[in-house]
Length: 515
Image (tube, rainbow, N blue to C red; front, side, top):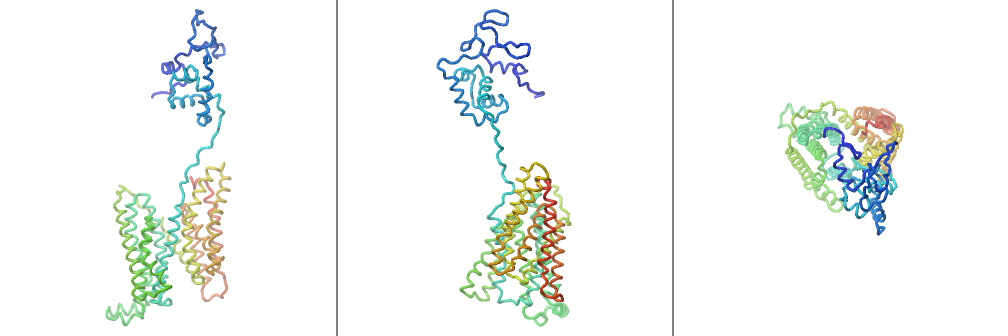
């Protein structure tokens, strides 16, 4: 079609409209351009021309003898009122009638109108105009409630391994190695997870390649850091082992050090494999692999499993998780490769790793005084993810409803407060139920949630810097040389949360962040 199509009768589509308007007599136009009736029974040249059957002296359709023409039009208007009401021009009604299959003969015989456009104009005049609201759009950020709750449970389930193996290791000697390795694993896992998600936007195969390389490297790094720091293996024992050779291993190592090394390595391997399954959204597979831990912990109140089962069940769960991660990676690597897929810069994931380290330090400081608070906080990470999705969905709805930037800023701030409050409220009774201090727990949870919210919108450095500063300051305040009773952690978390909230209101209050 090389040009615009004329819409008025008499245009370039005259032949088509003439067929539609067959039987409609021509009308003369007055000086003002409007059509005027011709004298009854006369043509334009003054000769007598009889009107077609069914028309009056002025050329308009005569009423049907049975009086049903007007009733049929009214009935048709009632049937199509919901679709005729929103029309802004009779031509839209004409298109609707054509779609309904009304023919020219049917229009003349049943409705008493000469053609399609005449009936459309009558229906348009008869039905009042309506202005329906557009149908609500689907929420693009609707959260998967079951998946979020399952992730919260999966974050806490590995703690059952420590419960099962508690009689087999000495917390005073072995815990430092597990803590150091855990902090390194958290930091590495956060950075690797971000990089894998960036690669996931390119292709699932590319993300699998990143995880296949990064996960084993992270487990090795965490174990080596725990060993080299002397937390899992004292330096004196390490020096004696290196200089004397493997034969001196048993005499050089303190009692239980070998078990500590195995525990550190097992923890690092599990965190690496579990991170792979979580990034690839294989939560149900991870839950199935952890069933030996669940079964072993379930029988502890009634039965003593003994050292073999206490060791074997966590080991079976670890092997199952490693196998599940291998299956998931293999399935992801079968996806088609993306040609010329670019690689994101390593520095892009650095702030996410620093935030993981800071979050681990803050949780560790809280766990030193309130161990059960750590369990509550860990399980709450599932609902925290759910509220992150809800914030994004509600923000999109606020963007559609806002009339300007100021209105959206107000709505966005309200959505932020609503989601943060919805996340924190269930933690209050949980803290009281476990005997934990609610103030510190709520402040720490609010800090972590707001930081994760900023990260979800691509603002990675502000939460990393604020949380790392809060963790270092709180750790310094908890130093043994300082007088006891200084509430370093709650004060640091309160200051960090205030900074993060101001940053969130400023950055996320802009419509461009949600478009």
